Amino acid sequence: MFQSELRRCLPSAEELPCSDDTPVDSELQELIPGLLKSILLLLWEQRMDWLFGIDMAVYFDPDLPPIVPDGFLSLGVERVYDEELRPSYVLWDELVVPSLAIEIVSVTYRQEYTTKLERYAQLGILYYVVYNSRRRRKPKLEIYKLVNGSYQLQASNPLWMPEIGLGIGYERGDYGGLTREWLYWYDENNQRYPTPTEWVKLEQQRTQLEIDKTRQAQAESQQAQERAERLAAKLRALGIDPDEV
Image (cartoon, rainbow, N blue to C red; front, side):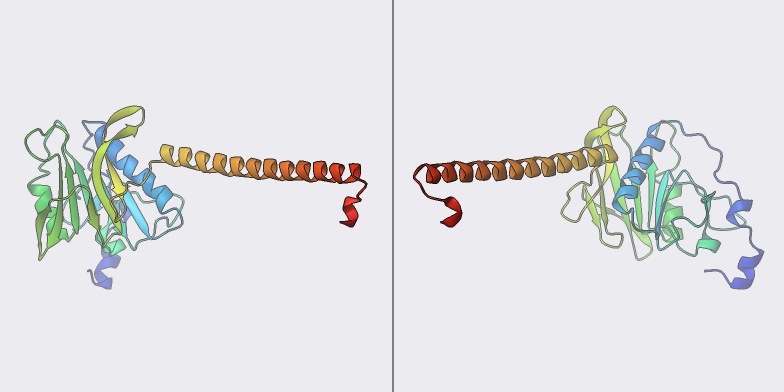
């Protein structure tokens, strides 16, 4: 993307602002991307080749201000390269364009359907997801895929994204003590991946199931031993040594 000589002269992530200092005007702009990231941290726990940024500045041109998605996913990058983590995402350092960008439309419209859509397409971001819970007559979730340099709206909820290996969509559920619509990740069969809370409950259920199986096996073994002892007692009562049978 950038010549090595030029890259050496460009500022690094540590020298650039980490965001555009624009405060969010809805908790959903933090909670929804936060939920998606928390699921990935469990789902891709062993993988170190991905980054999910939340309200993180994405620098694409040293002479222009960054664009700041509510959330974005990059594949093929270092998940962690030091304990300070990334302050921002700098394309001339990372050399990897995010695969997916997410915008949560809130009270204040921020050109999610116009300027940002055009900018993400220009950057080459493969998927662009816009969620607007306030919509009534139009779809709340719009997922665009970059085809021949322009975005095409995809008519699916959830939508399987083979290039990423994930599906994304929305449905009602519980998170943070709130029951409402949330964005989730899905597998290729449209089965939703569990949230961290659901994951813990599933693990507890699996553990309890193993405990129950062990207890049942122990009980069956004990019953078999008791039957053997009763049979041996009957044989002795008949004058037969069970050890010689």
